[in-house]
Length: 104
Image 1 (cartoon, one colour):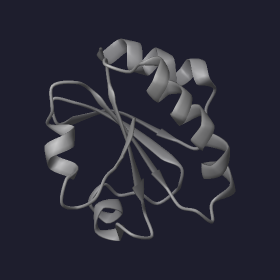
Image 2 (spheres, rainbow, N blue to C red):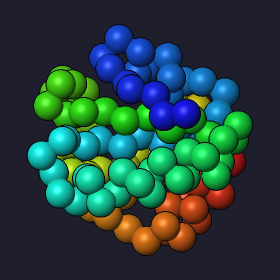
Image 3 (cartoon, rainbow, N blue to C red):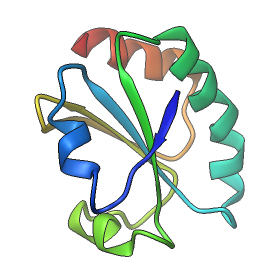
Image 4 (cartoon, rainbow, N blue to C red):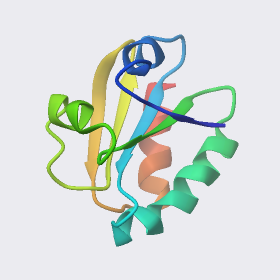
């Protein structure tokens, strides 16, 4: 299940038990729409091992600014509340899997 992350729940989610993958996106962003099905698939593939969340940068611009998001899509992997990896743009599915496997 993919969680909609906001300013209100972000810290609680990234400080949870499992690693968290956060997709910073916007509805008008073509590459974001290309990445979305892959993020959905990873969420199912790693269910119970990771948390997957999305941040709509248009609705949560303070969060985007807090993490210095200047290009979307940007995917950040957090573990124990700390940023472990930042991937900008659309990558191959195996690139995401490699980074997820590294933190779980």
